[in-house]
Every structure is written in C-alpha cells, then in structure tokens.
Amino acid sequence: MLSAPPRLSPDLVATLPPYASDPTRFLSLVAGQGDVVSYRFGQEERVLVSDPAVVHEVLTAWPEESRWTPITRAAAPMLGDGLILAGAPSWRPRRLVVQRELTYRSVRRFAEAIVANTERALGTWLRGDGDLDLQAEIGRLTLLNLGDTVFGADFGAFADVLLSTLRASQVAIDAAMAGRFDETERQALDEATARLDAVVQRLVDDRTVEPTTAADLLSVLLEARESGDPVFAGSWLRDEAVMLITAGHETTAFTTTMALRTLAGEPETAQRLRSELAAAVARGVAPAQLADEVPLTRQVVQEPLRLYPPLPALHRTAVADTELGGHAIAAGTLVVVSPHVLQRDPRSWPEPERFDPDRFATERRRELPRHAYLPFGAGARICAGNHFALLESALIVALATLRLDLDARDGPPRLVDSGTALRCAGTVPVALRPAPAGAAPAGTGAAA
Ligand code: HEM
Image (spheres, protein in one colour):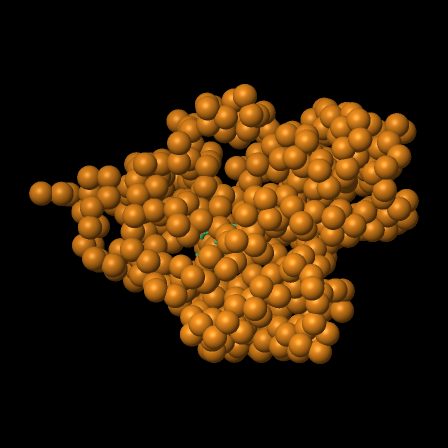
C-alpha cells in the first residue's frame, strides 16, 4: 500500500513566505522537506517533486492530457491550438513542421540576421550616454530578431504594441497561476489576444501581397496551410504564430539580459571570453560562427539558464490516481516540477549558488548530473525553440562582449517570479564603455 506524500505541516507553512510573494523561495523551502512533498494552495492540492529521476518520469512518461493545468486553461483563449497546448493526434505533425525549421543545424540560417540586428543595436548603444537599461534594450533587440528570422518581417513598427501586449498577457496568466483569474484578468487577456491577432493578420496579409522566397518560419507555416492537410487548417496558422511570439520572446530576452548582466559583475570571465572571441576573429572566424567556434560563449548562457531558468516551475495534472517516487498521487493533483529547485540542488550541483560557466565545458560534460538541468523542459514536449534561443543569446553575448565593457550599476537585479516566469523587476542598469582597444579586431563589423 503506497503512502501519500509527506505534507507540509501547518506550523511550517506558517513560517514560509506566502507562495505568491516569492514562489521560487517558497518552492526551495518546500523541497527542503523531501523529494515528493504535498501542500495546499487555496483549494488545490499540489505536490512538488524534486528527485531528478521522478521529475524525468513526470515530464517524459505522463500522458499529454496532464498538460492541462489552471495556467494552460487560462492561456488557452490566447494560444488556441498552438503547439504548447495542442494534444494528440494533431500535435505530432504540427510539431514536426516547426521543429524541422528549428533544429541545431537549421537555425544557423538565422545567424546573419541576428548578427546584423545586434551590430546595429551595439552601434546605437555606443553612441548613447554610457548608461543602458539592459532589460529594455535586449527586449527590443530580441523582438526584432524574432521578426526577421521567424516572420521575415521588420518588427520595428510593431515593437511597442507587441511589447505592451505581451506584458499585459503575462500579467493575466500570472494571475491564473496565483489563483486570482477574475473578470478583469479575462478582459485584459482578451484585449491582448485581439491586439496579437491583429498583428498576426497583418503579417499574413503583407506576405500574401508580397510573397517571398525567404526561408522564414512564416513561409513554412503558409506552405503547410496550403497543403490542404486538415491538421493545418482553420485557426492553426494564427495559433502557431501567436505561440511563437509568446513562447519565444520573453524567455530569450530574459536569458540574454541575465547572461550579460552576470558578465557585467564577473569582469574576469568577461575578459577571458573577450580574449577567446578576439583570438577567433583574428584567425578569420566570421561573427555568425562565434557561438560555435568559441564554446565559452554558450557556457556563459547555459550557466545563467541554470541559475535563473526563465520558467522556474513547470506544471502537470495527474489525470488518474498514480504513483510518484513511492507515493500515491490522487487524480487531479497539480504536480509542480521546478527547474529552479533542481538546478540549485547541492546534491547535483556543487556550490550551486556560484556562477561557474565551466560546469558546461565540453571536457566536463560527462560530470553533468542526469535530469537535473531542465531550463527547456524534457521529453517529447521539450522546448521547440531551444537551439534558436541558445544561438541567439550566445551571438548577442559574443558581439556585446567583443565591443563593450559593461559595468554593473547596482547590486544584482531584483528578480520577480510570478509562479510561471522569472523576470527582472524594473530596469537593469549597466554602464557601458567601448571594450579596451584591440579587443574587437576589425571585421566584427559593429557600426560605432
Ligand atoms: C531561453 C529561452 C527559452 C526557454 C527557457 C524556454 C523554455 C521552455 C520550456 C521549459 C518548455 C516546456 C514547458 C513544459 O514542458 O511545460 C517550452 C516549450 C516550448 N517552447 Fe520554449 N523556451 C525558450 C525559447 C523558445 C523559443 C525562442 C521558441 C520559439 C521560437 C520556443 C517555443 C516553444 C514551444 C513551441 C514549446 C512547446 C513545445 C511542445 O509542446 O511541443 N521557446 N519552452
């Protein structure tokens, strides 16, 4: 007979910060009570799982219906039947269409556009007054990159509306996670959805008027729709486009912001990276190849992804009575898996709070703990944009490090976790100067 998971005692609950005030801290403290721990959240029974093997089982072996949670239900009117929410049998062919375009190899075709946008942005930053809000600037740059690469469109004209719309929708979805999704939130989400729909419609209309031979994702989505396969009919194209904008932007922007902000406070690592990049450029490596040719570039993105996973908690619902880690889990229980908790667990990561990009060095890859690094999730539903996100972040970090010397203005940015996403509260100020002479040999191209 299986026992129920240990429950947080009311005495202990009284000592914890309220979940909504600091979800990642709350989850870390709960995880300290055991690998499978249950607690009450409002009227809901939740279970936090922190044993990497059990987490792996939840993410890879649980049925698709387990993805229906209060969060996905709240987001459904906006995301429609886009990949994140699509279920069997339509999920597989839809995933294939998107995935083929976003493999490790195929995202390389986006590198030139990312480099060009980044170089333009660096030129503008260098002409400024030496102060920069990393969060705002990277948010804009990653949006332009998403427009150019995925939609073959200049998002400059849409940037303000898209940024404010994405923010509004996030606030509403956060409210769902905190158990307070009321009529006001519903209305805010509906309005944000209508604005996103209008942008997507305009992108599709523009493309119909001006067809292109470009290999962006919008072309591929349109082609699939025209194939006549019912799986790609109806609102599918709209849903997938909205999904790519919402899933792809904030996560990548936050990752890149945190990577650059972390380097601003780690001058030795920044200098080491700069030297390795400069040596690569001196031997003829093109800017678009830097992320591949200088492994440290990726490592300084992978390590902040460990410390600050943009999605610090993933959720699944037990669709039937089941067992986890030797405990009975009742149907309907919300199971929480936390990349934040797993990626700071000292049993898996020695000195977990320390920034050490060499954890991800090629020669140490075998030492990496199994199933304890999940910034992109795991299993069949692993993030479809992981290669794109890593390439984009690494290229921005590489070019910015070559050209700029960033200095942290204040202490570490204050992070807020809504329970669904981690982000920086307010601005992320840094001081910038051109990198020391000789660090960015001719050929890196940034227009100063
Ligand atoms: C650093 C950036 C990113 C992070 C940390 C991230 C993280 C994640 C995670 C954790 C999941 C799985 C959620 C779950 O299992 O409940 C996911 C799913 C997904 N992500 Fe990302 N993501 C990032 C960037 C992107 C980008 C750039 C795109 C597209 C351009 C994208 C598209 C998707 C899609 C389509 C799914 C759903 C996949 C499916 O269910 O088949 N993501 N992401």
